[in-house]
Image (cartoon, rainbow, N blue to C red; front, side):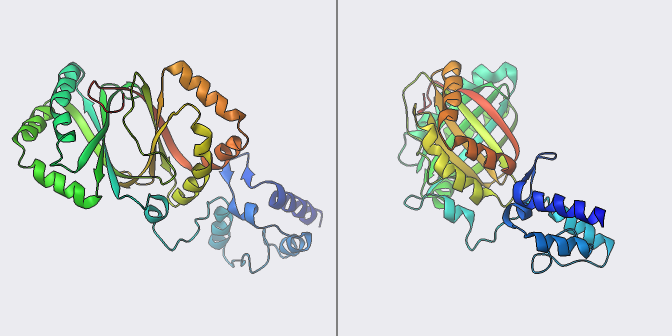
Length: 310
């Protein structure tokens, strides 16, 4: 009986006080959302089941069922949705599709690669024949070395992307560019993105600036939750016009989020990021969004000479 009493006290405290288990860093939706009365917990412990009586849980008659029930305490619950997150989070008034490209360049070819891009890419950007725009083009400074990052916008969505790809097949200058570029690259990858409705649309800006691309690999099923918190959080990050654009992936690495920021220098970046902690509510955003992340990284980038974002 003494053991039952101790278990009862422990579970009651957990159900009220510990939605985030500090020993594991795991978020427990059951403990966060179900507030049990002492009588419910006492009956559960008395019956040998560590949890509330139905309708919350049903006891299993086998060991595997008990293991599954216990493991489920530490698995984040995904709320059912009636619409795709791309419809709920993307801007409705415009049908913009973005493509981000990551090119890993042979170190000895980086200068020649930059010259090639500066000669060819602006001609596509300024030509109204192609329904696309070069948003920005950079070299990484800190992060992955000898890497170029290009961000394109297609006004009109997937049909515009298809139109551009078909037209470029007949562009001899572009085909020669791709052939020459291929000799300079170690690897390349891309993603198709949509922009969050609550972020700024990236527009050209004067420099000099450095840019930070922060990329987050989210846990599957948590994109809506991320969007809900950042819809509020973005207001805290507009003090120095540092917010450039926010995107989430549709094709490529899925459940990827990219936040693009601009700063005058690294020290101003540090000062700006420290100052945001003075805003009431920012700490809550960090507290609740960190458990959604599986992996994250940061690139500090320098714009190429012909980048619209300088």
